[in-house]
Image (cartoon, rainbow, N blue to C red; front, side, top):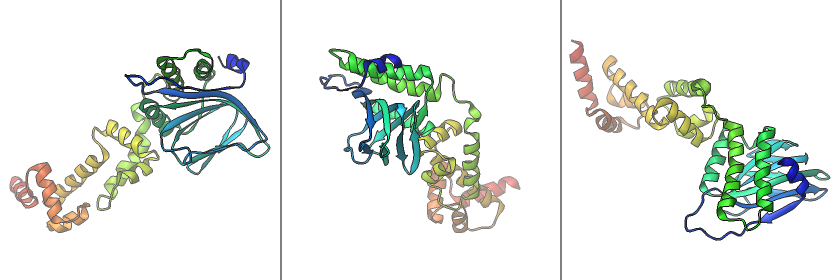
Amino acid sequence: MLSQLLDHGHDIRSLSLPRSAAPLHCMAVAAGYEQRRNEVYSWDGLKRGTAPFLVIQHTTLGEGRLDFSGTQHRLRPGSTMLVAMPHAHRYWLERGGHWEYFWLLLNGREALRLAREIIDSAGPVLELSAHQIDRLAASCLALLTLSGLSPGEASSAAYGAMTSLHDSVFGSRPVPEHALAPALSRVLAHIDGQLASPLPVERLAAIAGISRAHFVRSFSAAMGRGPADYVLERRLERVERLLLASEMSVAEIARATGFADGNYLAKVLRRRRGISPLEFRQSGRRAEM
């Protein structure tokens, strides 16, 4: 299909499709096959309006550049760029350069969801297999050449493009359970070592080295509960140990376990355990007698 798209030649098509009574949530907006040579070509991801949409752009010849949140990428033949708007990125052609590529513009919440998953896992520049490139090219060619394109056909082509990227990144095999082990181990060790300090989810995601959304999903799947709930339970477990094994006051234990004060600790313990700190201490020590 890539060869057929190249044979078709340079072309651009914007789609004006009738509004559907049952909206489709992965939809093509436009597609094209272009070349840029010795000209000004630059797109800023924060200056393309506020409505969210995606760009998939596959380089066939020459080279483009991408700055994605401060990280520089070279877009060489075989590279596929995936970016969403609005976002802090810019892609451009270097002065005197040459860049040839085909592209698709997509919108819809399902397209955006898949894009977030792909970018979180693999970043904005992908290296697809020949088979997946053919699938991507087939979607672009269909959008450029099909006459009387229906909303369903446009959505099918858009979904075909997104699933080619999905399959390239995730494949058909489930993620092995141990795949998150190194990042997860770092996070769990940090939590246990810093229970007295603030532990916002953003900080834990940074330690894991992935986005906040991807971290929350991955952590919840691995641990059976969200990161905030896990942190709270670890704090309460330490509270219980300190109540039984020390003579520290409730206020001191609160400071040592990340609670604002003794009163807040008492409220959380009663809500989660149905007992006050002093009642827990007394009942625990009676049980040891």
